[in-house]
Picture 1: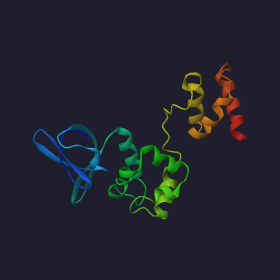
Picture 2 (picture 1 turned 120 degrees about the vertical axis):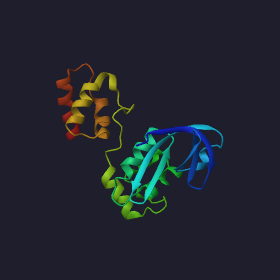
Picture 3 (picture 1 turned 90 degrees about the horizontal axis):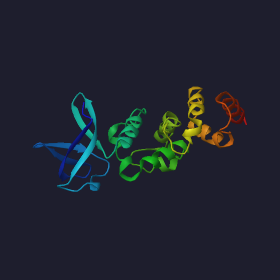
Picture 4 (picture 1 turned 135 degrees about the vertical axis):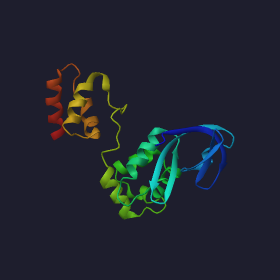
Length: 185
């Protein structure tokens, strides 16, 4: 299993790059090969796709892209060859936002993704893409409260909604009671 590869780009194709690492050229499928420059060194984060008659490498500019890709390919009917083009024109945040807001129109703009598959993506991934380290929740005063609410199964979006209405001077038990009251409104 490969995690990443570091080397110089030796050639570009319409949906792939070839990266030279110690004299070996690795063909890696990427969302947008034109983001890379020939003879420039890059670190590419990899996903190995292995099937009976196929061994393919898919590359990403950062771990956030790779993690989203891994979640996307777990959706029924959405394989690596269909998920990768989403990164050519869509940003990680744009894709996540479209899923959270159930924006079917945004998702169907990608090649080979119809309305049925877009609905399946939303059904499978909505509420599962928000990072736990989201900077929009004030962690310092409410770290323990956030942990308790997440363990109770509340979504990060609901937690973000109630946190500003809770006093940081309260004990954690009182913060939880106040948060639960606000969640029910």
